[in-house]
Image (cartoon, rainbow, N blue to C red):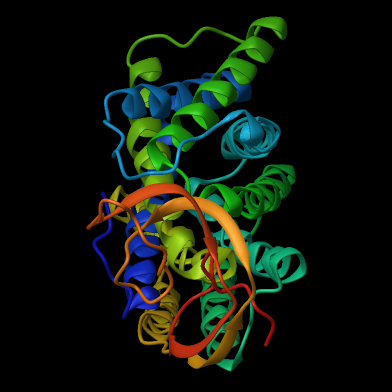
Length: 349
């Protein structure tokens, strides 16, 4: 899914992309448990990201996107290690030892960790509205946890919690890659992650999945991880790592609802209360308007851009219209307009 020009509503469009990403990822937890129950954790992780890589090969990159080069190799390796090896393996290991619904709820901690890391490393603003939205979502998850049956929290739950922390690190490391070609970013992350995970699976002699498990995990990875990551990158491009991670907190609730629809009736009235809290958090994000006078320092970089967005005044000979990508420079500028924590708006508040 490619986002249209939306310079006047970056937070609204970014929030919509994050919600779409959350829907796909949240629903995937149920299928990971279904198809990965007899597999080792690294086998499960490898097949999920192999599916994501294959799905990315079938997509055509847009000519306007900035390329992924050798300079990004170390970051891509770190992203693959945290997000495509450690996190999914921990999730797969935890899902065998706890319920899919309980695991989905625990994944809500990813948003909290992501907001903290984005604040620490990118100085992204966390105002009252973002804090209130995140608080509503955390309270929603706590409401669901309070209604879960006793005895469902174990070492498996701890593994899922650690998976959330690993994915939060992945989200933070991915932020500088969000302005590059998303198809190539997803492809390289998935291919490297799948290779590392499957190599570990072979070395550890994990069982080979049979029947529909392997193709089931691959399809789940293509949709719930590959396509979800493309949407997530688009959201980060518009509104930064912290806000994207906060909206993405809806994923655990969606996963819990998927489990309920599949027959897991361990949640009761509290699910309705939690649903209202998650919905309130998403609405707070989608209706956020962030605008103030701000200054851009001199900057040189490459990413997809157009010349009618108020930030790219350089001249082409012959003239170029529409979206395109090339290395370009920005002169110092001061102005006021709606914006998120994107590539050009990482100023302090």
